[in-house]
Amino acid sequence: MEEERIRVQEVAIPAIEISDVVKIYKLYDCLRDRVKDAFGIGGKKYRIHYALNGVSLKIYQGETVGIIGTNGSGKSTILKIITGVLHPTSGEVHVNGRISALLELGAGFNQEYNGIENVYLNGTMMGFSEKEIDEKLPAILEFADIGDYVYQPVKTYSSGMFVRLAFAVAINIEPEILIVDEALSVGDVFFQAKCYHKFEEFKQQGKTIVFVSHDLSSISRYCDRVFLLNRGTLLGEGKPKAMIDAYKRVLVGQYDFSEQNQDPLLNDKEVLKAAAGAAGRETDGDAESGPAGSEVNPKALEYGTGQASISGYYVTDDRGVRTAAVMKGSVFTLHLKVKFYDYIPAPIFAFSFKNVMGTEITGTNTAIEKAFLGSVEPGDEKEITFTQRMNLQGGEYLLSFGVTGYRNEVFEVYHRLYDALNITVISDKNTVGFYDMDSRVTVTDVKHTENNG
Image (cartoon, rainbow, N blue to C red; front, side, top):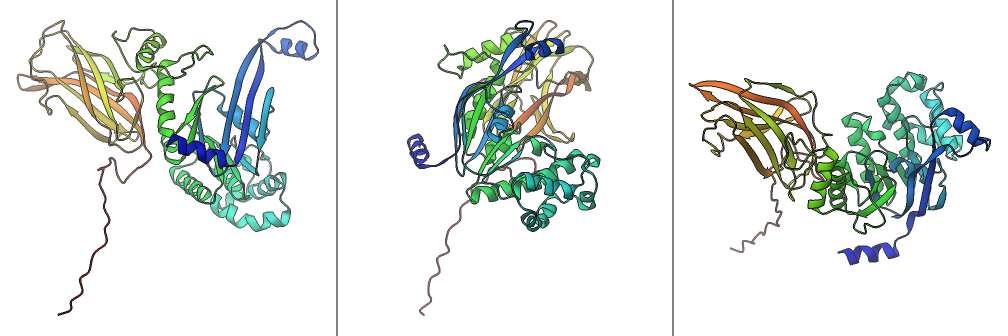
């Protein structure tokens, strides 16, 4: 399969080719140092920051390519260099085709102009005549769907209206290469669906799409290939699932990539060790709450009698690596650690998933599963794991945990944590409703027999 991909790329025509690109910024402690440096006086009073450090990549015509990475990894910088908004400090960039870019909300818009005037302004900047813009205007306004606001100054627009109009202009000027940087996250879900439908049309037309997004489900669903950046360095490129998996490991490891490390993706043991260091605790210590705590809710609602406490909780993927993102269809495990301060005859350990609107989707507990029916003594500590396959649709979910039980037939809550963890489900196929029934579909021809009787 890999050999076939290489052969296809050998005959494909690059739409974008970047060779050993470096982008350096000077960081000054104060404005005075910046001014002195501009006039060449006062000596060197700045620090060097590599936004990009020797990045090389090829994007072929007709591909939909995603670029992912942590904040500050260089994703937006590389898009700006591709579009000519920025110039590299060194290296070469070759673009083969007309580019339409949606890099920043309202970039290229005049705040005082109304929507129509900005359509003509942007079209003219892209090299279209007034007559050509006249022909495209109905399609632009139909896609933007902002009604009479199009006649109002854009400074009065909401962020959603802004992105609707900007994207409508970007996709209706017949680009050969479309570049989008996170802008779609501003629009509502219906507008996003319309944009991704347009992506599908572009793919069928053989156009090239490059987009940066933190929405890993969209990256998985729409991209043919994905590039992974980390701190200005290209860590790898490949199929979406492989690169998303690698990105999850980068989030867990928070490691420094060096030239001495020829294998940029740490193995699981090293990831866990690095994660513990990043979180400031041992991997088998208390209060374990995920890779580096980024998905932990510091304001989680908690209450209980205090006879037990949930001292640790986190999620691991099918390889045992801690994560805040789970691939749909894969096996994952919830980990819970509980300390007890009193005798409890039969504690019940539970978890539940909610969507971001607060609707409880699913969950279970040890009583339902008949997994633990014993008693505990003061000073006891238990570690509980729930292992299952992820069948929820792609999206964001909140995890809650609880330790409850019955004492003299009275239900008691010893410790409960609501919305403690945020988990992202990554999916390239969302069905209807909350979960996927994982249907197996067959379609066969019906054979008709002729009646010769």
